[in-house]
Image (cartoon, rainbow, N blue to C red; front, side, top):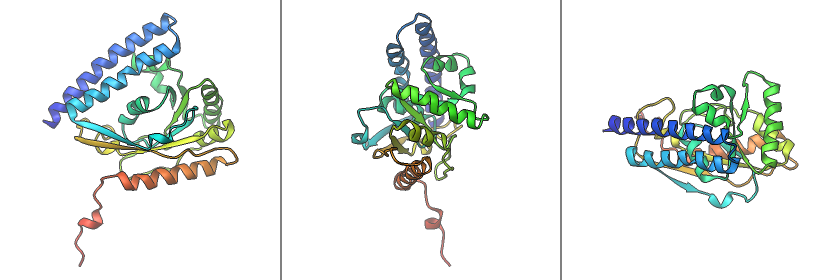
Length: 248
C-alpha cells in the first residue's frame, strides 16, 4: 500500500506541476501582474500538500506562528526534503527563493519558477554568488517579498547538520532585515531522493525573530543555527541507538 500511495501521489504531483507551470508561463507572457501570477502558481503547493495528505496520509502541525512579523524578513529554514519548499509558500507571505541557477534550466518547472523573481545564483561563483544574494535579496525585501534561504545549502538527512553558509547572514547584516528561523522534521516522512513516503504528522516550528541590527554575519548564523539545531533535537523522532543497545 505504501508503494501504491506513493505512486498515486507522484503521478498527481507531476500532472498538476505541468498544468500550473504551463499556465504560469502563459500568464507571464500575457504580462499579468506579479502578485496575481504568484497567487496562481503557488496554488500548486496548496494542491500538492492536500494530495500528499490524501494519498500518503502525511499531514503537518505548526508551532510558533505568532513569531511571523508583519514586515518582510529572511527565512532560514532547515532543508531535509522537498516538502518544506511547498509548505513555506503556505505558511508565509509572498517570497523569493535563493536557489541554484541550474534549476531555471529545467523544462516547464524551471521556466515557471524563473517568472517568480527568485535569487538564482551560481554556487561555484564564490564571492560573486554571495554578492548577488546581498544585492538581489535586498531588492526583493524592499519590494515587499520575503527571502527564503536554506543555509545548509543542500538537503541534509534527519539527524545530521552542515555548517551554515555565510550568504544569508550577510544579507541580513547588510540589509538590516531580521531573520526568522524554521525547524521541521519533514525528512522523516518524505526523505530526500526517496520515492516511498511514510505516513505521519510533520512538525514545523517557527522561531523568534533574530534581529540583524548591530550583529555580525557570524553572530546571526550562530544564533540561527543554535536555535534550529536545539529545536530539531526536540522534534526529531529518530531512534537513539544508544537506548536500543545492551549494556554489558
